[in-house]
Structures are given as structure tokens and as C-alpha cells.
Length: 391
Image (tube, rainbow, N blue to C red; front, top):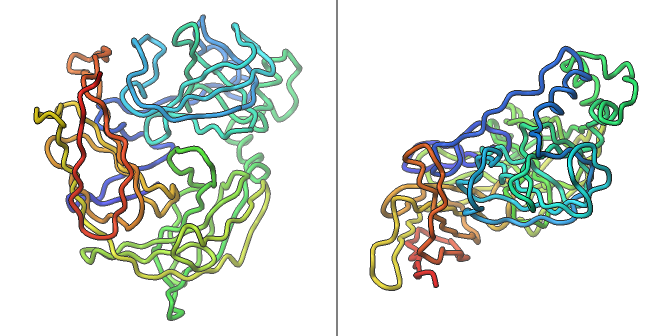
């Protein structure tokens, strides 16, 4: 979870598995887990939810890219990310269990900040439950049962028609309590200030290192350092991570911040590898003060006409893409003012939201070329963004 500050009010701008709304949309992520008294029944439940035209398959992610709405005409199977940015995932099918899936298939899913998007990792293998959008594209989400293959044993045995093993007959809570220590790691340490005193109530995060331009994947639950500066982050999935800590000082436009092993720049941070079952300790590091700024983004047009403010959504994302690099998604008319912005390089984007005033999401022609611009923020600033008419 990433907490930012806008107009003096705390608000949530990133939560990989939150049930928050997408940027500027009335739509939100909410889903029910697969039902069943044991893992075998849960597997059957997820399988039965796939639509008649949908597919279930094992596959390895070849590549991913980020795109922005519009996707195309909505269907009953269209996920809620129709109203915002989404990711396009190319997956090489290894084995299909239901429906027509072969070669490389295209799967759409949300970006992961409240839109139910599933967080695929390139090069990893997954069991995918997907509904069909059209003849060329599928969609999936965190609600469908899609999971890494190493977590999908009961489901794979069910889909292959194999006899259940004792684990498959465990109640879901019992099963996950047994498997989590094998699947995930733990990292513990202390946070202190430069003078050696501990920093209490700092938000301590581990961010997965990846190349794709997606919201940062933050391991584990929300973790705050204790009065002596100590912390322990649980539920860390295997991968390479950066460890960070921060604490905003109310009404002072500063924050304490730092990367392990005690630096203030993303480029100087030392990553480390986490594996399932690992219990890393003595990850001690120092944080320092950093100024935060107020930034206003003003939208204009190249021909002097009024911009489409009523449906204009706006995102600002720190290019470092770690837990210290804030991200905002907003939909409001007029100037866009952000408070508590850390220094750094940001990607600024605008996009048009669908008109859902009648409870529908019709695809409307986009008459403007949207902004995609990198900016550097090192002080209180006013930044002009210019829309151009689409060809």
C-alpha cells in the first residue's frame, strides 16, 4: 500500500489487492473467493465460473506492456479495467484444459491498483482462468483463480483428472496456513535516523524489482517499525527486492526516507534475493530527511479550445517505481494540485474515461491526443500540459 496526500487529506493511491475504486471511475474491485469445504471443491468452483467461451490453461508469460483505454466494445466478460490503464500479457500456452488455447495468447488484466488486475511476472509460469473478450483476446483478474503453478497443486490435479492427495482435502484456511511458510519468505531488521536513534512508525516496504512499467509490487502486509525501530515483513514471494522505509512529518512538508543499506537514491540501493521459506535478519539501515513539494498540473489545448475536463483522467507516476516513489490517479475538473510530492522524475499521462452516466461503458471517439510526458520535480512547481487534436 502506498499512502499519499492530496488537498490535505490522506488517500490511498496504490494497493495491489485493494477493493478501492479505479481512477475517476465508479467501478471498483470486489470478488468472492472460490467456494468449497476443501481445496478440491474450491478448484471445482473456480473451474465452473469460467464462461462457456472461456479457457483454462497452463502457460509461461513471454512479455507484458501497459496500455490505456479504450480497449474496444464492452462485453459481459469485460473486466472493470475498461475505465483505465491496463496491461497486455502475451502467454505461451503449455497445456490447455478447457476451450481453445494454443501457441501465444493475449490476456488483458488490470494494472493492479484497485481494478482487480492480476500481477503477472514475465518469465514465470501460471495456471490461467480466462474469459474471452473477442476472437483474439482474453481477460483475467485476481477473482478468477489464476495463480502461479507452484501454488496451484490442488487445481492442477483436479483439472488433470488425478486423484486428490491429502492436501487437496484440507479446508482452505488449513491448507494455506500449511503452505505459506513454504511459498513465502520473511525479512527483519531495524530503521534508525542518522544520529543513531530509532525511527518508530515508519512504513517499511519491500518492492519487487522488474523492468516493465507497472505499479510497484510491494511484498507482504502493511508493516510499521516499532518504538525501537524494529520490523519484520512476512509473506514475501520469491524475487529480487529493494527495501525502503519512510515516515511523513505532518504539516512540515518533509519525510524521513531511505533505502537499504542506508542511502537516499534509488540508483544506490542494494537489492537482495528472497526465496520461499527464507527468514532474513539484521537488515538494518539509516533514513534521512527529504523535502516534499506542492505541484500544480494545468491542462491546456494547442488550438485554444476547452479541454474535455469532465471525462479527463490523470496519472502521475514516479519513474523509480518503488515504495518511495508515489503514484496518483485522479479525475477532477480544472487544475490538478498535488501535495507532498517527493523530488524525482515522473511520467505524467492523461486519458479519457468512458461515459458511464447511464450505467454503461460505451466506447466513444477520442478527439484529443493524450499527454504522455516526463517531468522532473525538484521544487514547488506549476507544470503546463498541452492536449492536441487527434488526427
